[in-house]
Each structure stands twice: as structure tokens, then as C-alpha cells.
Length: 228
Image: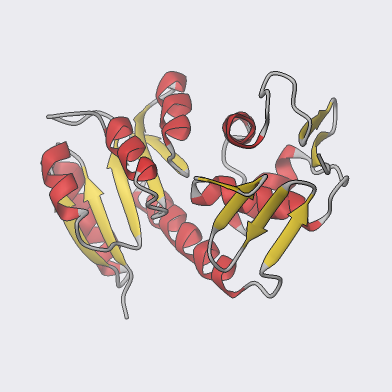
């Protein structure tokens, strides 16, 4: 069965080009031109959402934030303006998994979509279903994270990063290693995105994100997860 992708953008030209490219790769595509249309479309199930930051009737980041607040783990690829670091940070903090800057090549966008869907299937098929590190418990098959028996809502990318760190507690992973794992390829995107994901994770799993006890920085090397 073809993967279903929702593309949300108020530019008809972008909708046409992206839809044509994705359909040419065998995806089933639906489109929405504003936040209201997107919310109605999302009453159905999709395998991935391509979401513009700026939309009539509400921002893409607000829509993404509502999806995550409702516990929806559908992967979200955000479309942002060129070099708009604020859009990047806000989008990832809202729960987006990755971003592509405008103008973009359709080949790059299709590649990102395929990578996101591939890693989602890989996560579902991983053998070790439960990982416990101190008071942190991850159920890989159910995409569920608990801190001290309290369920916390993670984005797919946040969960995948945490699952990697939980495979080898105390081991230091570099930003590059984390991003390569995130994409299951040599593509690492912007390593700054890794820092944003780590910051978001700390807000969700640490007692005091400003003084982390579980997810630690090893200066000059990367990050590690320790029992706490």
C-alpha cells in the first residue's frame, strides 16, 4: 500500500510541484492550502505531513504543536524560509522532525520524505522493544516514553534520538552520529537541529532542564544518557 502524504502550503505552485514529484514516486498525496483545511484533512490518517511555516488562518508551527499535544506521532517535515533560523528552532520545538528551506529541489524533498518514512518502518521493526535507563523507560514498539512512570509525549525524532542513547547508556555519541542515526544514512542535515532536539528532550525528561541529570553534554564530544 502506498504511503499517504499530506502537503500543506498556501502557494498553489508549490502544492502542484511537490504533489507531482511525490505522486511520481508512488506516494498517495492530498493537499491543503491553509490551517483550517489541514486540520480537517488530518481527521484522516497520514504517514507523513509536509507543512509550510506560514499559512493563512494560522501558522504551521501552531498546527504542529496541536498535533503533538493530541499525541499524534505522524512525522512532520517543515518548509521554512531560507536561513530563517528562528523558523527552524520554533518548528522543531513545536514538534517537527526535520525541515527543508525554500527554495528547495524536489529531489531533496523526496529524499527527505523517503528517509523519514524508512526510519519510521525501521523503528517499528526493531527487536529490543523496551529500554530502561534509571527512571526513564522506552517502549519502542508502542512509541511510548515514561519518566518515573509518567508518560511524556515525544516527537518521532526525539524518540529515535533517545532510543539510540538508551541502547548504550554512558556512551558518548557525537552530534554527527546522532544525526546519521536519525536519518539512517550518511545525510546529517544541519547539526544545529541536533542541539534543538536535545534541548527539547531535556525539557521533557529532566527535573530541571537547566541542570540536566539524565541527558548530559560531554564538551567537545557530544551527548550521553545516564541513569538518574
